[in-house]
Image 1 (cartoon, rainbow, N blue to C red):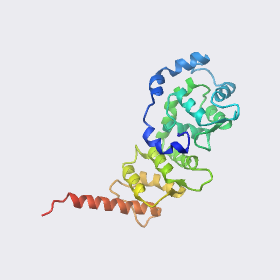
Image 2: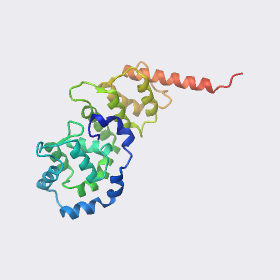
Image 3: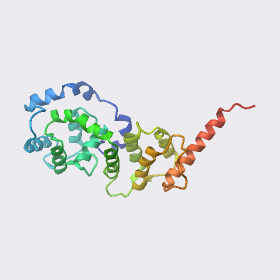
Image 4: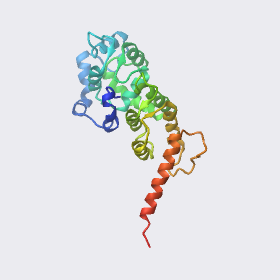
Length: 247
């Protein structure tokens, strides 16, 4: 999850990258954190400890809000990049409403649900959080959540830069046509993506064959996807024409 809009364009580039701090500290995090706080991963959940942990990432001016600087420190403590998809899953569990921020109430809700009150425990929970994405229904819920979470709260639609970054994060590894769709968006007239388009992109990625043979132009797809199919077929036709040797 990015720190804020200024880093949205970097999500896709950085989601797999490990910073120097993550590479050097990830394996030793449980030991470092448990020795510092005398907390073991198997200890029972403590709401008081959970709130004390939250306060490590807040400021006296905003004691009930974990902001971008606190988010970076939190991610450093658990050994992941802010742009890693696991942070989106965690935000979903918390019901966070603004990218780059956790309220105290959101923090307590999400971490109570996963029985986590320390960095040592969170490191252990990361694989579980990632595994949630393997369930198609859970993935769909997180995908839909990501739209409202990532767009500007005062806008009805998501700007295209943020949309492309979030689509890369969520679909880049799993949808074979994503590179072509990203290229289509790059050269298209679209400046924003609305929620209907967003939801239909996921459905399209799950149901339409790579060769587009089962795409029904008369179906209930948004015009954006009709245009994408038309554009992709044209690109393929041009590629095939250029590969045919002239007689």
